[in-house]
Image 1: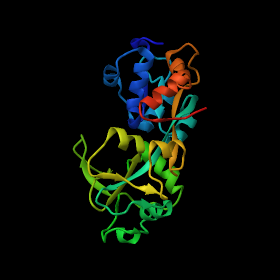
Image 2: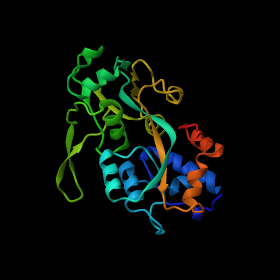
Image 3: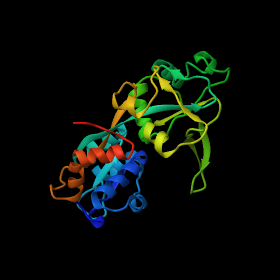
Image 4: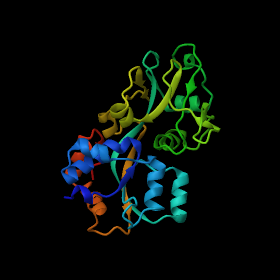
Length: 271
């Protein structure tokens, strides 16, 4: 469909990197290993900014993104200053919660999770676990999983401050940094399913069931797992019909495009 040189400059979420590489391989005939070496992304928030605010017809600007939903603050930036986009859901993922495999707790309800992250439940014994304080980690404000966490679980409710650590910056200073998930016996963290299942398979981790349903490709596909959400392909509205980015964007809704998504281990959205 395209030559390797024609493939559009594509940005996206970290958890979408394998899919972007597979799309590049399937649409250009490039071998997957080479395609993987060509993919570089700038996280969810910056992918949307790079397309809407800074994308365009220039050769070195972002033309296509494969990404999770933009944070609300970025949506506001795009509405105020960005170029209009065409976007569509192409796949489904889920917000998942991670604990140490030695933690006896197997499932939490959505309300229990909300209460943990509001600071109302503070000890694992209150939800059937050991007598240990709960350390509830969050992600960075601009991460795709933090956006899903706020949207799907918190829904505007109470949210306690995340654990912080002092981290040196390149400028030599120290800043408060939201601590990312650290696998300790009393910790709980969250991510998106694909990242944990396919990209970061770390020994000692276990996924919690939510409302009694364990996340899997099957429970995400049929949406019996309660914290599912779609991810998107997007191009600028001013991308012409014959541009490489528009061709790839349209191809993603074909049988071949959906097969590419499934082949990468994601759950494709069916029209």
